[in-house]
Length: 598
Image 1 (cartoon, rainbow, N blue to C red):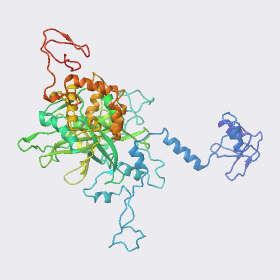
Image 2: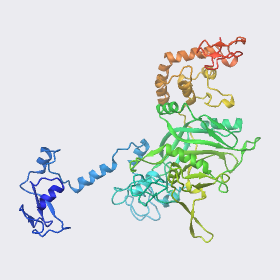
Image 3: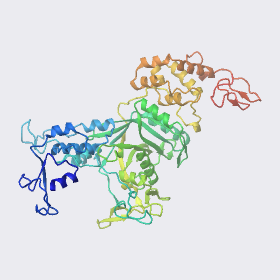
Image 4: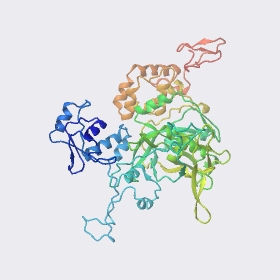
């Protein structure tokens, strides 16, 4: 019987349902032992299954046997079906950044005042000349001063979700340059490939949006201290930017990266190169920054060549006639952006793009130091992630898309340019101008400086041994004696990012497990919490260690005036009284803890 076939096919019970030939419940097929041919039902005919009035109600069916094979299915309405579809589309739940959650709840409209010349309505009316604009309106962005070439990422999302379907089917897909796995119709690459598993060719386009719209350093001191290394050595320097993401109100639904501190990892720098070294303190730095309410928002490096040391000018080397970012720098920026992906609820992968920024300290048109901000596009991130992009050795402004090999399949990468007649010509990206991969971001300093870390004195910056600036208890004693002589509050004394890193990561007495209260005091600028931590045993021990090396924090012993008298050198190996390390003869300070022999 037809209804038995339907019931068997869908594991339904035959009781409680009726089968009809027509949608309007006419032509009911009764329970008779007849074949389909006698009922004149052919292959491809449509049958309509409806709950019968004699059958049990859907409420009773749902509550009586909710998990058994004989229970009857419920048929939700279209609204409930669409809601369940949207819930399944959004699962699993993605925890977006706080700034993304905030901007997603904002209206984002661009409100305009009534035009006295064009508007012919009353003060309560609206017309095409004063109606609010959408945040992605390109004419409005192009007429700003200066013009904005890229809309904000949240304005781009509003553009995608602003149609009649409200973005019900919007999905931000990440580009993949790898062969899809699981294709069983042919041998694996390089023996075989098909259109199902082959990645699509990529045509590079200018990205219409950017994830960060402005970079702002809280004050000039942050940048000046970073540039001191180049000023004293002439070698280039790199650092990680720590700060927070806030709303940028100059652009509709914009995001600003505020920089509060720069951490300089271990590195080897020359006048024209930089090499990063593995950082054993990386996890501790991330943990301290998180407790201070900060996060890694980008990286900065210098590219400076002195032109005239008498007046302090530098060469203007990065411009439209040379390059803004080299291919190697674009690949490095793409690598960092892939490490710090942006959580996004509209992406099936749970992430899309990145808010990680790149800042270059280089010479400007006026031969002064300028800070230029950039990001690389999502297309560049995909090429870097899947190892498809290489730098050119002798031409820094050109990249090169790799060719397929037996180990890796590389999709074709193209870019478009105009010929001398103005026609669009498609070129293979071998080589590739990196301008197609770069997104520029305005970098600024505020008129009124802001200080997350309020210390006016300078504790030595980490990993600057080449300058003779070391982080040890000698430098801590000097710093504390200077702070106490200037009558600074204890909160101002400890409100230094590099000092807090030293207190946590030093090898003599690390305070990683007991510094939480002090970090809360610095984060909230609460003097009472700082005074409470000052009374702890840990700080008393630090004071004792500092007084031992000659820089007593109480001010009774001025380390800057020379400190205690040191014993004469010995000709034998001696053991440190503080850490028991065996030191070589001829030294008066321990090589391990830097404390004096006496």
